[in-house]
Amino acid sequence: MTILVTGGAGFIGSHLTERLLQLGHTVICLDNLDDYYDPGLKQQHIQAFTGSPAYHFIKGDIRRQELVADILSGHQCDTVIHLAARAGVRPSVFAPALYVDVNVNGTLSVLEAMRQTGVRRLILASSSSVYGNTPGIPFREDQTGEQPVSPYASSKYAAELLAHAYHSLYHFDISCLRLFTVYGPRQRPEMAISQFVHGLLTQTPIRVFGDGSVVRNYTYIDDTVTGFLQALTHLQGFQRLNIGGAEAISLQQLISLLEQLTGQTTRIQHFPLQPGDVLYTAADLTLAQRRIGYHPAIPLREGLQRFISWHKKKR
Ligand SMILES: NC(=O)c1ccc[n+]([C@@H]2O[C@H](COP(=O)([O-])OP(=O)(O)OC[C@H]3O[C@@H](n4cnc5c(N)ncnc54)[C@H](O)[C@@H]3O)[C@@H](O)[C@H]2O)c1
Image (cartoon, rainbow, N blue to C red):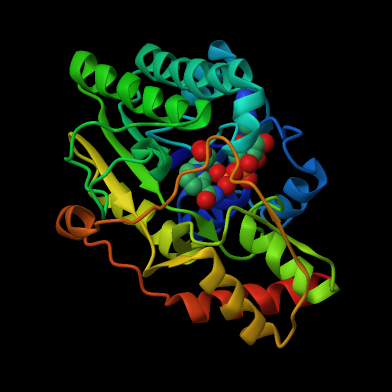
């Protein structure tokens, strides 16, 4: 297959690209290397692929519909995996217009370019954050009443809703994958696990928002990528699927586990819970298991060990 991966230079996109190339697909990466975190890191992420005949990198913005359409027709793409987004919950509270522009208008631009060029297969990276503080735990895709509590979460939900309209109007096959906090090598540097491991290994203070009781379902990157590949194989109709990890634990438990695995402790600074943060995420994976055979394989302890080893090597 020839697949356009938007946001392919990012954390998840670069891992996905690696696996797609290994499987013999051609990957066209469209990424504007935005400044949400150091663009130099993104250049490093894609260094290994540059030069491969099955890989093409285009530096550009998904909001330029004509550019997206030219890429789709010029490279004869049959599928789009849409990851490009402004990520991160907390910054979205202070820059809602930017998040809506990139995540909603950007998604619309991709959908329109697909319609224009006759490409009908899409996998959309959505987020567990769309559930917000909804009372039903674990979160199930068919429970109604998603309650996003940040502009980021709302923008991801809006992207899903737009995608549904294109499925309904133009019969696109679309899977919206609701990802639950993804971690592993190349994780975005502002994310909690990155920050905690960095703090422990460099003996600098760790900042914790809230009292440590906030619960997250953490997914190792290899499992997330497997979810995308399984969704690619079973891309039919419209579906929303939770792609979560093996375990959900509290922030406090996570820190204890990281202390154990690194053999280090450090000072913990507590700050109030940030606006837009949800209190828990927990994934019901029954539907993803039934529809695409998804089942996370990497236990949290093992995933964290792998991440710590990678982190030590890169320093
Ligand atoms: N990492 C997670 O835990 C997580 C959880 C839920 C959902 N997601 C979603 O998965 C996707 C990838 O997340 P990530 O963690 O790899 O983030 P990331 O920031 O590493 O990757 C996003 C990529 O998109 C690119 N990008 C941003 N705006 C763009 C634009 N206008 N045009 C072209 N490229 C643009 C960025 O340069 C970046 O390389 C995002 O859609 C995010 O919302 C991630």
